[in-house]
Image (spheres, helix red, strand yellow):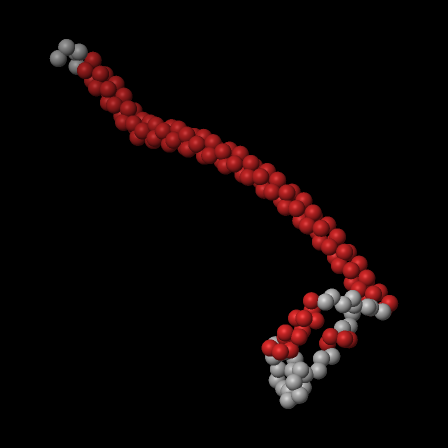
Length: 158
């Protein structure tokens, strides 16, 4: 929609040129002198009905309808945003519950794994001691049998 009436402004002061660097900026309202303001306030006290032609009224109605439509759309979008926010909140709560249960399961699994590792280390240590002591026991056995045989051969009483 083009703005024909308000966008084509003329300078407020006669000394101002349209080629100035600030011509694209919005013009500030210049406060009139005191005597003009007094007269304006007296005139402002007496309301004057503004008469609009059919085109202006249609234009105002069109904008009013657009504003109502935009308001309705914003209400709908706000409702959708609220619903999405609630769904996201529920999803986050469910995810937190899942993470909590997963964390507990992992802690339990780690505890069991640690216990299994300690039992495994104990068994491995036992096997190592058996492997170390086996040759010693075999040697003692052989020495013991040989010594006993020698002792028996010697007469057994010496």
